[in-house]
Every structure is written in structure tokens, then in C-alpha cells.
Length: 69
Image (cartoon, rainbow, N blue to C red; front, side):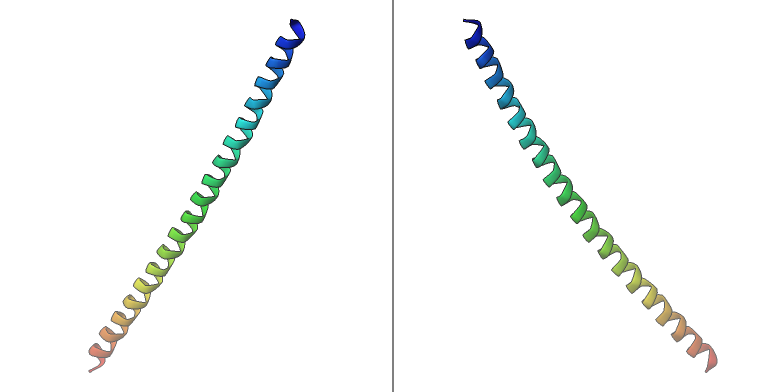
């Protein structure tokens, strides 16, 4: 009887190990997606900052041209 209980306990623990590994893989995949989304957000922010700086430079140039006239 004890060998059967030991076998069932071992099988149950092995199943937990597989579930834990699966959970870890899922968490890693979610983290990777989160990091990729963060990179996209950062790139978009950098583009918007660049556009804003370019517009500010154009406005400053226009203001300087108007002051010279």
C-alpha cells in the first residue's frame, strides 16, 4: 500500500512541476510583450519630442526672419 501512495504522491508532485514551468513560461512571455510595448511607446515619445523640437526651431526661425524685416 505504501508504494502506491508514494507513486501517487510522486505523480502529483511531477504534475505540479509541469504546471509551475508552464506558469513561468507564460509569465516570461507576458513580460517580453510588456517590454516590447514599452520600447514602442518610448520610440513614439521620442518621435513626438523630435517633431516638437523641429516645430519650435521653425517657429524661432520664422520669428527671427520677421524681426529682421
